[in-house]
Amino acid sequence: MTKLINIFLVFLVQKCATFFVNETKEYLYGTLLVDVGYPKSGDIPLLNRKVFKGTRVSIREHPYVASVRRQYSHYCTASILTKNLLVTVAHPLAGVPVSELGAVVGENYSDRGSLVHTVVLLLIHEEFDPYTLASDIALLRVYEDITYRGSVKPIELIAPSASLSESRAFVTGWGRCDSMSRELCLPRTSKYFPEEKIDPMLRSINFKVDLSSLYCEGYLRHEIIMRPGMLCVGQAREEDPVCPCLAVPGAPLVVRARLVGLQSWGFGCGYHHDLPLVYTDLRYYQPWLVHNIPILRKIAQSNLTRIFRATRGYILSQWLAETRLIRPELEIRVDKDIVPTKLDKVLAKLRGDVYDIRDYISNGVFRKRKKEMYDTMRQHAHAVSSITESQLELRPFLSYNVYGFNVTQTGVNATEDAKNRS
Ligand SMILES: *[C@@H]1O[C@H](CO)[C@@H](O)[C@H](O)[C@H]1NC(C)=O
Ligand SMILES: *[C@@H]1O[C@H](CO)[C@@H](O)[C@H](O)[C@H]1NC(C)=O
Ligand SMILES: *[C@@H]1O[C@H](CO)[C@@H](O)[C@H](O)[C@H]1NC(C)=O
Ligand SMILES: *[C@@H]1O[C@H](CO)[C@@H](O)[C@H](O)[C@H]1NC(C)=O
Ligand SMILES: *[C@@H]1O[C@H](CO)[C@@H](O)[C@H](O)[C@H]1NC(C)=O
Image (cartoon, rainbow, N blue to C red; front, side, top):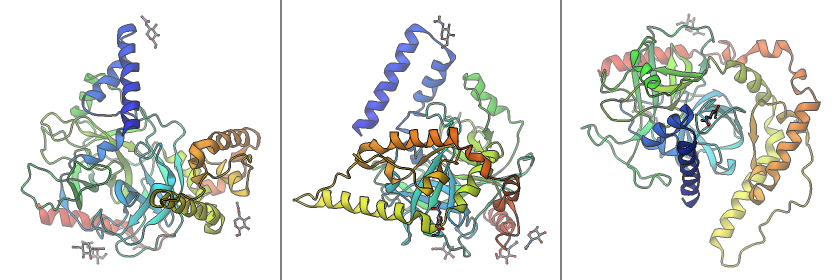
């Protein structure tokens, strides 16, 4: 908490200083967002608290939706891309130790799930900016493979050239109980948002995409510039009182059963003048995904076993330290230099900031060394050269045939379901 406050204070001081010296657009951009509660670096996960209106749905209708847990508490929403890769937004995860993260799939409730998949690698876009929320995208690699079933299926990405206009879009996730609504909500408290009533039920909202919506220009009027890769879609509250507020960050935006966007930020929540939400546009980040996904997929589970064991060992040692009167010797020695392993050679090929357990032990002493090592490897080893053109073209997660089933069905059912309910 103190850390959050500190970050916020530093931010305020910086911004105020800017105000007196140089009142730039940058400043206005920052304050406007701070005035409505976001984005404040370090405070961003509070987006998690916002009301998520919509219809209660079953996970079977949206089997690609996963709940990212932080120390077993629901934290943000992700989408399943492959049996061990999830995609979500970067902002709630920046600075969170990988050891605290897990993922639960196939559950209707954000507080259920007996199998938590351990996150062993976190890849955050190299250009992610916590202040502007540019490049708000991250990939999570889990250790235990996800078993596909009726309620658990991956989703394909939409083609970069696909047009969205006039299509029906779905946004699905978990959020807060709506105090104004008469709808049933059995609130749970959350470790990270203790003062909030978290609605544990999965909800979905659907709307027709109208790319010419004048409401998105509302952002421009507030001097907030949409950066490339940001997609403003959906209704404003004035138009439709049942529009998604900022739900759990990362909630997937799905069109024609393809993943189009990740809910990232927005202006207002629950007020009459709310503007449409802004999503990370996955069509724009397709090259980033197409570069990184094959590399992450090539890493076998056996290659990650050491990282997984280290993560487990670290968690156990933390727990012992917290619960024992006589504390065990905990400090993991860092006098040894970090040396490149085979795995590091693979990880250095990734485009982005890759985190694993080594980045957090001994208060991040390894982090700096690892980063330097990767930067050097990237500069000298022409990291990308070993990824051939054909591998990029393969785009396994884009192809119908790989998974042997059809996510389209899900979308159709979701549409039917929405019709039945409204
Ligand atoms: C304000 O800042 C911008 C960029 O940060 C700079 O180009 C401009 O010259 C500054 N204006 C003044 C009055 O300092
Ligand atoms: C989710 O809800 C649906 C509909 O109520 C139910 O059929 C399904 O079994 C539930 N799934 C889980 C994992 O609880
Ligand atoms: C991954 O594991 C396999 C077999 O366990 C091994 O042959 C391969 O070299 C490992 N790759 C890396 C990058 O560690
Ligand atoms: C998937 O759905 C599409 C469109 O509904 C259909 O044309 C195709 O045959 C289906 N494929 C499979 C494998 O079911
Ligand atoms: C919904 O899904 C079920 C099973 O996945 C399928 O049998 C059914 O035909 C689908 N409904 C529609 C309207 O496509």
